[in-house]
Image (cartoon, rainbow, N blue to C red):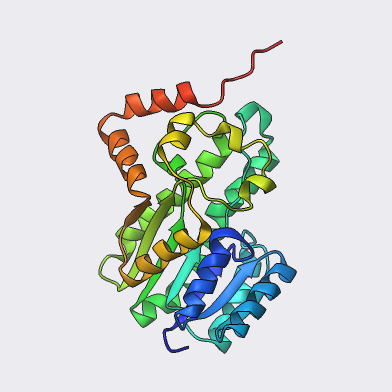
Length: 266
C-alpha cells in the first residue's frame, strides 16, 4: 500500500477495470466495486498475478446502504482511501416518451447515485485526513446535450452539478473533486446498450477519435496525481467544449441536425 488506497466503482469492465489495473501497477491497493463478482474476481486475480493488491466488493453502488456497509469494511480493514474513481455508469439513449420513469430512476442511479453514495460514504474520513482526490467520470453530454438521450443526459448533468457543488464545499480542505470527460470509448457500453451508438451526432463521431479504456485510465491516473477541476480528453473535444461556451446555439444546432432524427408519428 505504498502509494495509498484507491476505490474504483464500475470496475468490472471498461474504464473502471483499466483504471484499477493501472493504479495497482503503480503500487496502490485498489478496491474493485461493481455488481458482477465473477468479473471483479478475474480482474483481482490478474492484478495479484502482476504483483498488485486488489480487494473485491461486489455490490450495486446505487444502493446507499450497501455502499455504507462496504465503506465500513474498507475503513476498518484498509484505512481511509487516498483516491476515489467514480466510473460506474449506464443508460440507454432514448427519447423521454420511450423512457419509463423506472428506467429514468435506474439511469440516475448510475452514474449520479453511485457517485453520490460512494463520495458520501468516504467523505468524512477523507476530510479528517486532510487529503484525497475524487474523480468523477462524466460525459460530453454534460457539456452539449444531443437528441434522444434525455435520462442519460440528465444523469450526467446531475453528476456534474454534484462535482461543482463539491468544489465549493471542499475548497481549502485538501480534498479535491475532479470531473473528467472523454469522447467515445471502445468498451462494452454500446454492447450493453444496443441502439445507442447510432444516436451519436455525426459532428462528434467525425471530429473526435475513439479512445481505449487504457488511454482513459492514464488520464485518470494523471488527474489523481495533479488534481484539476475539469479534464476534457482528447484535445479536440476541449475545442468543442470551448465552442459550446462561446457559441452555445451553434453547437446545440449542430448536435441536433447531425444527431438521430425523431421518428415521425403514425
